[in-house]
Length: 268
Ligand code: OOG
Ligand code: MG
Image (cartoon, rainbow, N blue to C red; front, side, top):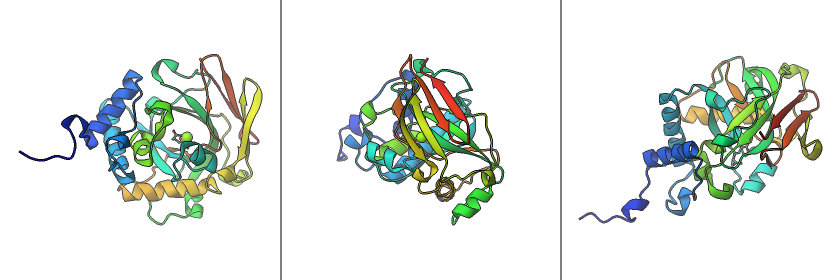
């Protein structure tokens, strides 16, 4: 007989965690964090799960369209209790077309946050990518609103859990204004978060690691560790600038940027 540290029903591995997270997503089912049962689920293991889950998404017909950063602002880090920036995958299934309501029927407990979005013109390959090199590869800058939806009950997780869960990816919408990076002061760009017409929070681009270009560089350098690069045409969500707000049915949220226009999302 082989001795094991855990009862068989508690023995998670990369494949079973990836499959369980996608099942939770498909079934709109939340769960406790894996680290409660599997404390070894650290950042590196979380990224391995995330990559396996991406393979499963692609096998079921989703197309990789870019990356998202998570926890790049103090507001987000403090709220989530995780103080390390994260990178995760975006697929075409996560695109929320302009004017479309939040797909409440496939989400557990959606929250929405304002983000500065880059669309890449050039390939960006780490390691060693600087803010300047990162910004030189950007084609356009857009306003974004990301709908996050953790598969963990009450958004309670540790770093390894949330990385495995593709950084709480749900859906994202972008605005219709597209500016060249040179035509915008990214650090000073202000956003107001309006819920049913009333501003409840605000931030500037500086909230994103001091400069959203640093978030892009971080993503390129993290992907390099996983043998990948940021590709031309990819969308990059640089991370929530403020804390996220709930968006239940009946609510309207507008992310009003100073120069990038606004993105309005209806709760449905
Ligand atoms: C983690 C996802 C974070 C962001 O922009 O910080 C994220 C979470 O808050 O559940 O998308
Ligand atoms: Mg986000």
